[in-house]
Structure formats: C-alpha cells, structure tokens
Length: 197
Image (cartoon, rainbow, N blue to C red; front, side, top):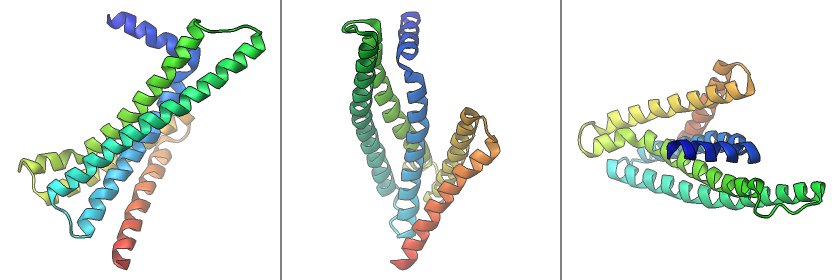
C-alpha cells in the first residue's frame, strides 16, 4: 500500500513539478502560521488580555482559518495554473491530453499543493501554541508559556530561514537571521501599536 502511494506521489511530482510548488508553499505558509500566532500571543499579552484560554482560542481559530483559506486558495490557483500548462502542452504537441498520465498528475498536484499549504500553516501555528496547551492543563504558568512560545517561534523562523538558505544555496546562517529579523520587526510593530493605544 505504502509502496503504491509512494510511486503515485513520485509520478505526480515527475509530471507536474508539484514537489517544487509544495516545498515553496510549505515554507511560505509555515512562516505565515508562526508569525500570525506569535502576533496573537504578543498582542494579547501586551494589551493585558493574556488569559491562556483566550490566547488558545484565538490562536487555534487563526490556525484553522489559515488552513481553510490556504487550502481553498491554493487549490483554485494551482488548478488554474496546471490547466493553463496542459493547454500549452496540447498546443505545442497538437494533441489532446485528456485522460493521460500527465493530466491526472497535474490535477492531483493541485490537491497535494492545497494539502501542504493548509497543513504547514496550521501545524506551525499549533506548534507555537504548544506551551499554552500545557498551561491550559496547569503544567506551566502563563508566563512560562509566553516565554516558551516566543522561543519556539524564533527557533522555527530561524529553521525556516536555514531551509530557504539551503534551497537557494546561500549562507544558511544569514538566511536564518533574516527570518528572525522578520519576527523581531513584527514584535516591534506590535509593541509600537500598544504604546500608541
């Protein structure tokens, strides 16, 4: 069963370049998930609404929303993109590709991209919230949960930056630091907004 599944996915990647798209979506949306939930946590704490259950509810809600939005938006976008590419191939080859392996692979590529998009954003957000799940069952205090979530967020951002550096074949440490800077800028903007309010 797993062997057939692996071969099927391998075929989809071979005929549609879905691996490239999926990798890009995974990193991009994991990044979004981390930044969004980090923003919710910091915003809640700075505005004095740092109740664990409130942060969990807001964070989980945002993660689910990103997952649904990402899945639907990516599927429609990728489906249109794959259909366009099929037409280009048909026009170049002067044949219809209906029912061929290429068409089936490209149709499934849109589904895979949507799943990757959805899961990466949701899982990244939920990982950041992990300390708050522990705080909800009184294994941690809310203060410790806040600090741990912040550490986890920056560790994830740094890791995603390193991954992007590897893909681009650039300095991975510099790439990781660039990702950290995005997180820091987000926090500074939230702090500035809190001072204004």
